[in-house]
Amino acid sequence: MIRIFIYGYLKLQHCVVHLGMKISFINYSFAYRTIITIGLISTILACQKLEKKTSNQVKADYNEIKATKVTINFNQAFIIKEIKYGQSMSDIYVSGTGFSNSTQILTFSKVAPLETFWVTDLDENGYEELYLITRSVGSGAKASVIGIASMDGKSYKTIFNPENDRSFKEKLVYLEGYQGHDSIFIEQNKLYRQFPVSETSSTSKSEEKQYRLITYRLVLYNKSYSLQVDTFLNQALQP
Image 1 (cartoon, helix red, strand yellow):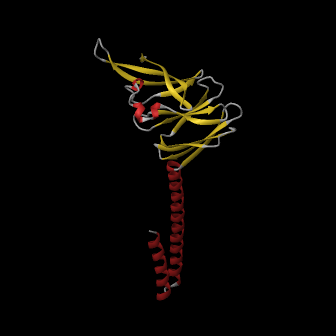
Image 2 (cartoon, one colour):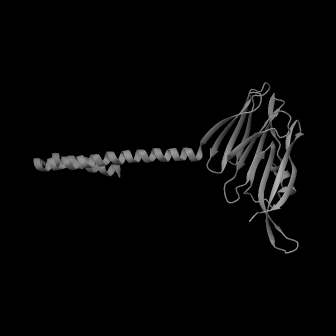
Image 3 (spheres, one colour):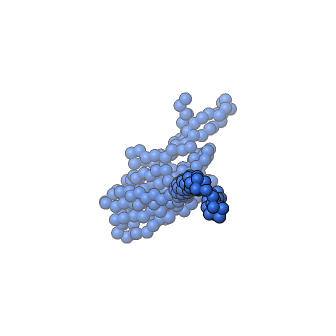
């Protein structure tokens, strides 16, 4: 479209000079060219503004980068960096500061986007852990827990979570009936998970809407720690 305007503008100039038209027509042509020029400038500026806006949207949607510093015990901290690719996938990097024997970067690739995080001392050993809560998009909106533990305040390691390992996850009876829509939270140094389930009543043979409440504990595992279920039970949903 811009090329057509420019071509018409130059063609009009050529015709005026070649045919030697009257002054009045030249003045009219000058006014017409002025209007066309203003229109061209407005069109170019609008296109540039649209391109800039589109570029910013693409950057925000497909290459969004966030960094958060989380202070824990003994003047130590974890730095969480998330690179978000679209609405459904992220790379998450966690590094520590103030740890005498560790400067490593823990990498969690192609995981669901970060929703929130919690800091607590689940095993009450005097050293706090960091728990990242990620959540998938879609109708299920399933949450996951990624944990990082302090090893006596000198280094840090990823907490093994069997729920994030497919070979273990399929055998976890406490996740039977899990279809997402869960909430994960911490109260009084305890980690909880709650999600809705449906069970068939043995008496009425009808489905009863319930929710399952799970509590977790932290145990030593393979020179690090593992997140294990402490208790779980079903309760009726309140109307």
